[in-house]
Image (cartoon, rainbow, N blue to C red; front, top):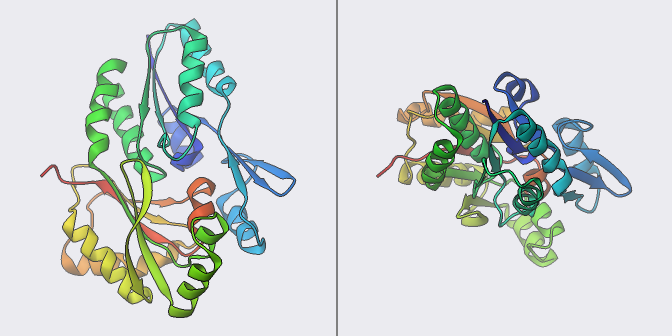
Length: 282
């Protein structure tokens, strides 16, 4: 009996990494006007951000259907395998509900669905830990239990370069976004308790990065877990943050990179940077 680990494309896994770790990815759909793309399959992050900046309106994203999960659940049932499913925050998408419906349709008990209460690399942190526990021999029920505990310590802090995409998504008025552009307002955001929220505002990139450093200092990183530098379209923005962490002696020892994909990138736009990590248990 094997343990299958499933997540959705909002986790922003590199396909080669997912294959190597034997993780099944259920994709979301991105719609630009009349054209649909399958996240991670028929559109790259590079093309996504190019299309995002060329358009005047935000694309829409569609959650996976119950049928997409049901197929994987039935395959596991027929093989007698256990399943651990770690998904995008239920407060941000109906993806979790699709998986719950599929489990009911499958009528197979050893399927454990975990609401990550997070997004992008925050999900990766939990899925990677699930893989580690699977490989250590822990059964699916125990893995799900450990993930429920760990998810309370997942931290994501990031700086958005522009308010335009929040405006397009209806989270800001045109006046607010225009005022932000004139004043070079750079909000700091977090994903906490399953929701994306603004935790600070600064004028200019330098001040925004300083605020990000303060947030990381207030919520220290647990280096026994990997950490991720998050960026939307430009990996080079690491130069704004990582040297400063190195100077302070707080650069994570197990640092990886994650390009924020379409699900969250639709709302934050290009030029974002931040960190996703497990916070110290204090």
